[in-house]
Length: 213
Image (cartoon, rainbow, N blue to C red; front, side):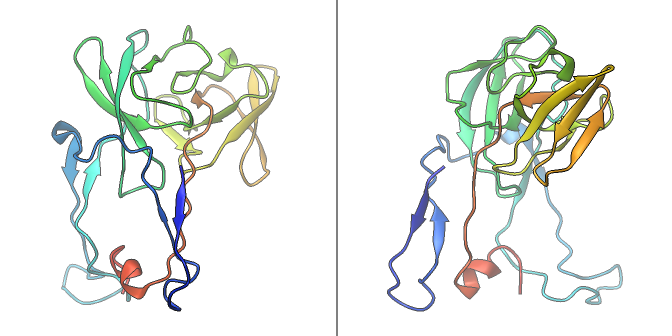
């Protein structure tokens, strides 16, 4: 994911960077996978401001992400790579062979037209989901479950990668982005890491678009 940096034509432009969106292949999201987001604007049930500096910003709709990947053995084709305003990583639209559609976090090097699959028999390649016991030691994974069937909770932001450093007595030893080593028993994870997206905020209204006042 490329970043576009501006020339310092003014103090507000200096150090400003935005995403180039070169990897985004579709502008409009899939309508069947959208849900409304109701904003509070820092107000409580009585309409009084209880949290300052919240409110405004661009209207968003939530993209329903499949963090569980329970459709084992059903191949899916990557139809598009899309922008998600609710997270730093890109998302990929999957079209399954049985006609279902879903969003997943788009790992690095995942391209439109690729085929992904989930289950113990899946290959070790970007976009596939399989148990840690079937993943070789040293592989970078993301979207790791803490409880079986709950869905991925670790390593979901852009650029974060979790390394499987060892397997010991039926447990997997994971090195988190913070450097912490963590033991997990049975978890589903995706191979490779997600896209990198780091943008510096310079202008006040660019910050205001993200509902900060």
